[in-house]
Length: 168
Image (tube, rainbow, N blue to C red):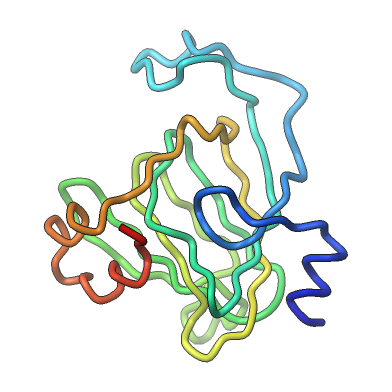
């Protein structure tokens, strides 16, 4: 199945800030109050969880960003994805999301809140269909775009990949 067929069948649209194509498939029926979080990270109530389909193609990537919630990526179909994760004041790691377990790929990858993350198809890939589950649920106001200059200064060993996963 082609990427265009996947987009049509699942009604995927361009992600308004991150890159790639997506559609929200789930919002929990319950919300949690912002006051439930002592650190004050949320400006208002959040769904207890949300989920999307997410599609990457060779000309797209998930820009470096971080969220105020934990996110779990699920691999559904296609080619492997390379994800860069950077811990504030810490180290970084590149993980592969896919179904070739013996080659170190994993079909499920967790990104804890506050971790800088960005993804792209592994070299030579044609498309990858993923799912992303966020808890507490995703809201655009909780999304922070990473600056190439800032991230390269903090993690110079990942400069080449950061230049591919940032727009500014």
